[in-house]
Length: 143
Image 1 (cartoon, rainbow, N blue to C red):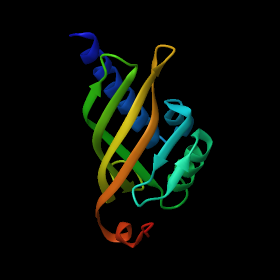
Image 2: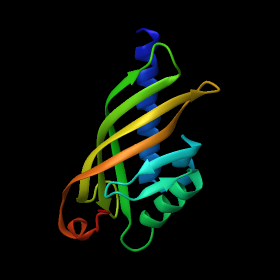
Image 3: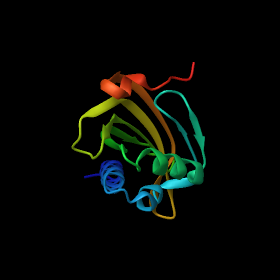
Image 4: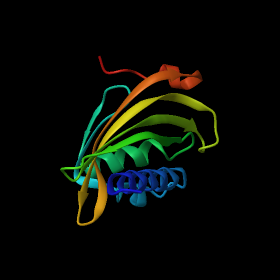
């Protein structure tokens, strides 16, 4: 396995651990893989800027009586051979109650990763909703 393949495997491992942390509602662990200045465009268009705002959003949607548990699965990871950067594409889904619950909204995502101090961190993510079911179809999109 070459360095780029190893880095891609590392990123997939980090993503899987973050996804498990979200399912376990360990939001601090999930947030530990974001840079402080992380940006995110939510699936229906809302913008998030910074780790604190992202953590607040994740905590508010993933707790309470009908939490949405987000699952993310990396499909491809491309690592630069020049810079400490990588690009990830994958599939995501939002499940009611727990990770095994019925998905109510799902789609695709892309992420930019940066390697800092020997760790791969997410600097930016874009999620796009493509399908819905039940209550997920009632969510409002930002025009």
